[in-house]
Image (cartoon, rainbow, N blue to C red):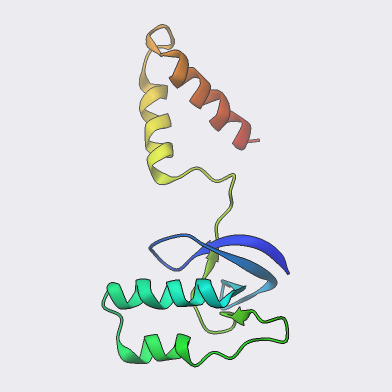
Length: 118
């Protein structure tokens, strides 16, 4: 399995390992016990119900020691080259500015963003 970063339908980004497969359009990933504990804590803090929390708590480790969230959880691998929503908005605002009024920092961000669009 390859290291990856992933998220659920919302919320924080977690470190995990990609199975290299999908389930119902969601990316199958596995996590360490430490990451699983963090996920449970985050979901509990967000008010998740007991059934959801128990579905995480009842996972058993794979032979590798990782816990699979595949084939049942709505996880999505985050493309590290994919800009955040905030960065996309900032780029859109910079593009609207006349080229002569852009700062060096804004020009650098546009160059960085253009490299992702290839």
